[in-house]
Image 1 (cartoon, helix red, strand yellow):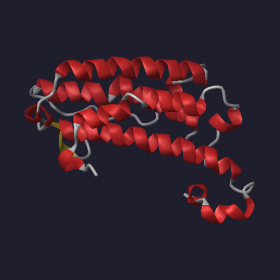
Image 2 (cartoon, rainbow, N blue to C red; image 1 turned 120 degrees about the horizontal axis):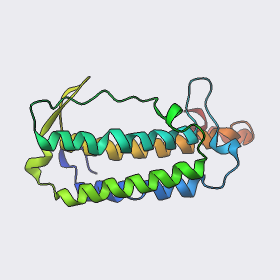
Image 3 (cartoon, one colour; image 1 turned 60 degrees about the vertical axis):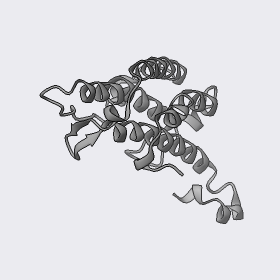
Image 4 (tube, rainbow, N blue to C red; image 1 turned 90 degrees about the vertical axis):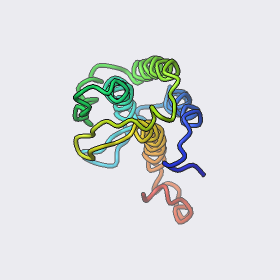
Length: 178
């Protein structure tokens, strides 16, 4: 099993390139009862999650990686707005968001591929506003884990719609209570 010490970029890219297809397969064409489901006030729906992934494509992963690779005087990351998607997604359908996410991710993966990163480059550091020094390797590993976490979150939100409908089987479905 891979951990942060032996992160392999090629393995991470395998996940990153699939995430838009996974989200599309999971969400496209579904009734809004599935895609707008939340866990209560101030929580995110699958629709909001896709908007969040888009915002990350625009402002987080590749922009921060670029900052690290440039190794300029200021390597401090701009704080990430974890709630920007609420404004940025207004008026867009889920299909619009899925298309936008697919397009942005493809472009970012093309950029990542063109860099042909070495182990030395992956060890370069930037400065996270909360965590301090972080490496490019850690940033890219986080991108992968972030995708998987939000895929799991969307699946959990959808599963919870049947929390009571499953009756006694709930005892065997821990996803309903997380």
